Length: 185
Image 1: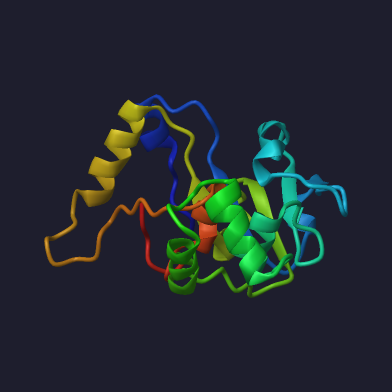
Image 2: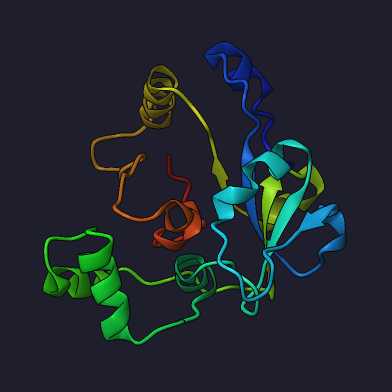
């Protein structure tokens, strides 16, 4: 049975719906679906307004929208490693050097899908077994509350309950978790 976030959302004054990322075999429970236009660049967050309208974004290894989502969510490489590192370090300026970017990519592995479809959109209680992450859109005070809650019963020798790794938005939705079966904030 999925957890019910209603009380938490009400107490924290969170008005934006929670966004789930699912790794599921069947698209039909997630309808209505939207997809990136094949062959055209599209960031997964360009579909935010569609999520608010109840639509779910379908991402596959064949149609993922941008190279970052292809890499982090679907483990698809759209350019050579050298070109990818150059783009991330020099064009986007995400790390101080290509060498450091290369080391970072060696350390962080992309997500390995269980099914051919990833779905990003409104939470679906009947698909809870396929839910891999939940994204909260919050202000700084709400973020502080969520961090406190995540750590509330966390002992000093427990793994960190909250992590803040470096990465793009889509990589932070799923790609940078070492184990999606361990709850993190």
